[in-house]
Image 1 (cartoon, rainbow, N blue to C red):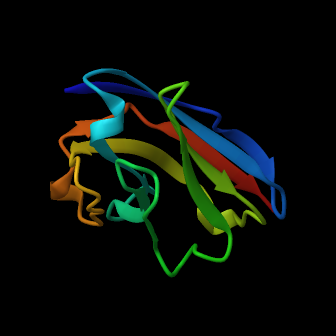
Image 2 (image 1 turned 60 degrees about the horizontal axis):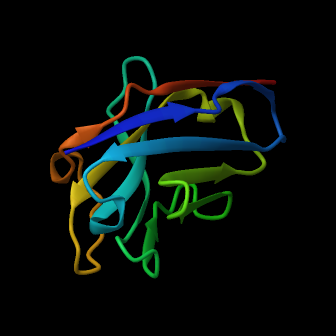
Amino acid sequence: QVQLVESGGGLVQSGGSLRLSCAASGRTFSNYVMCWFRQAPGEEREFLAAISSSGTRSLTADSVKARFTISRDYAGNTVYLHMNNVKPEDTAVYYCAGAYSPYGAVFRTRDSYSNWGQGTQVTVSS
């Protein structure tokens, strides 16, 4: 198990940029695939991006591929979501999640991840 804590959310103007952080502790961070999901009120939790345990492979949803980038920092045990040109429709609670996967796989389904953070609210004003 790893414990995950998101931060970096808040109110941002449309067209601006934001970087979300997910700090991990507990089990070895380098053995986990990490990802970001988001969920708006009344909507399903949406996959955004995942990055492999080694950091060499990533998968990003087509809906945000042009604007969002996932990365990880092993020294700081942190995964990031870099959000550029944010839009009002990006308003949601953003969740970090992880799963044990030491061989480079990436996953895009909610059920693939067993460790979840508490979420951080992102609100984009128009």
